[in-house]
Amino acid sequence: MRDREHSSGRGSGLSRRAFLQGSGAAVAATAVATQATEAVAEAKKPSRLKSSKAQKVVLTVNGKEHTLMLEPRVTLLDALRNDLNLTGAKDVGVSSNDGADTVIIDGKAVAAGTRLAFAEQGKNITTVEGLSEGKNVDEVITAFVKHDATQCGYCTPGFVVAVRAFLNKNPGANLEQIRKGLGGNICRCGTYAGVTAAALELCQKGGA
Amino acid sequence: MKSFEFADPRTETEALELMGDNPEQTAIFAGGTDLIALMQADVIRPDRVVDIRNIESMQQVYEADGGVMVGALVTLDDVLENPLLADYASLVQAADAVHAIQIQSSGTIAGDLCHLPNCWYYRSGYGLLAQENGKSLPELGDGRYHAVFGNSGPAKYVTATRFAPAMIAWGAQVRIIGPGPEDEEVLPLEHFYKTPRTERQGTTVLKPGQLVSHVWLPRIAGAVSGNYDVLQTAGLDWPLASAAATLELSGGRVSDACIVLGFVAPTPWVSQEAASALLGQPVTEETAQLAGEAAVSRATPLKDNGYKVQLAKTAVKRAILRSAGLLEGGL
Image (tube, rainbow over all chains, first blue to last red; front, side, top):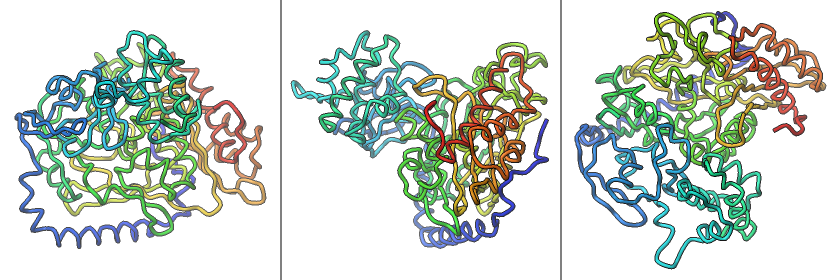
């Protein structure tokens, strides 16, 4: 087996000193900051470590604060579905790469199954339930209805949230960019044509 | 998922202290895109999870002594958007090939560099070496996604990093901190990876209690780069093979080259053969093709994965053409 007898073609011309200078400066800066905040850090330290037992967690979901008792191992997806009864985000399975659990956290599309509820305190979490209030529904939902972008419906909430997050960031995207951006949302029925048509129409209107 | 303690340090020192109590049983949470799945599958069963996302010193991208320092927590979105990284075309292309806004928003550079193998035997609990009764499962069973280089030892999986080939081709160096609060080492990213011969050896040089804090990329005046991922589907997918090239050109000919393959071996695979084939040549369809052929001349496919040799060859060819702005279609 080839181990490390060859070295890369690069590196010979590159100065290791340059890195050390750079990282040295960074370390020095860190050291100063560390000294300055040492007393504060010491005082706060116990709070950095949480036991594995259920404890108070405050989540901000769709603009409302919720106080829950959760173990650190509870994913954000499970907290939403099991503790807050927000079942729009779907649990498809272990790999979490299906997009059905997409929520928006501080403006970004995130798979809720890849986050721990504990670690998402203090952030603004939007679920699909947050995209409608009575008859006032998000234009993405209207566009999904218009373009018949749903069949069994299981992937649909995650798709709607992903499209909302995508449009916020790419209001003028073309079809190729839409397909690429939404590649993490899987639909076993094959509603992609409807979904991309819905997203494209909104992009052509300037993002809705 | 087994229960665990949770910690969220604010500084590198705090992180090392929190990891230091029981380093063997501590997992690091950054983007979360893979760790949660590994814990749910009981492949990783930590007693403590340390969430490093709030460590400010590891979130930044900044100029540093003739290059750019990239913090461990820099996300794929940052790679796509940060002007300091815009000249590293191969990195931007690698981030762009991850077809999911959910992964681009959460996934981190160090998480990618340390990503554990996607080998289905590993993910099913058979370990990195994927052996049963001393026999290699990828060899006996289904090894269609496994290694075509560096596979003569017990490890048959392929490395799962999407950024290391591009970064190694740029001559990146990696900064590792821990296990002690003052411990720090800097090494070429190429030397960060290793092929384990025993289950305990792991996929990188990282020891329990250590973590990657930064990656440094040199600026090379006039160098061009490209990355090519061979993807099976248009959606979110792991490359079947990938290649990255960084080339320096003078007088229309290649004066220096580094070509690194991904997803073909247990480590990113630096191809001296491809670089040598390209030196002194102009970049054309023909020279890129010859470099691709040179890159795979010593491939050793398993019974199920001969097709990956062709993919690797094409990835090298297209990465080279893409570096020079000559790639047409086929993306």
